[in-house]
Length: 145
Image (tube, rainbow, N blue to C red; front, side):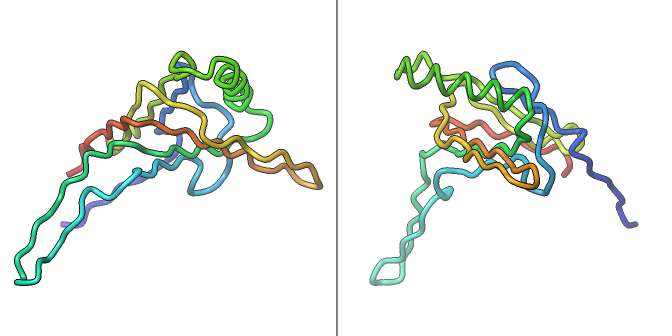
């Protein structure tokens, strides 16, 4: 028997420092988490035997695309000022997201702003892409399978 399902970004809940992410940009990549490294690396020796080294790298980059009028854009601008003035672990903040439909998501207790958005003005509104970085990303295991 075939399975039918549906998806909506409305079912995705994301928070920055406990505040709901608001004003997400349009598109299929409004929120993207990219692991810092592959899960591991394989090596084949001269005699054909192999070994797989499992990576201990749990870092991740988190891209959040927002509208320039977004409350989250304003919050991240404030976080950037704090990060620049403190220059320490005290500037770190938590981030999390979860898709209620699939259970996919993850969290990190200590994130920093890696890349701030460009500021462009013209005929149309332009995306504000923030990139956060964490050394310890904790993915959620999906519940759909």
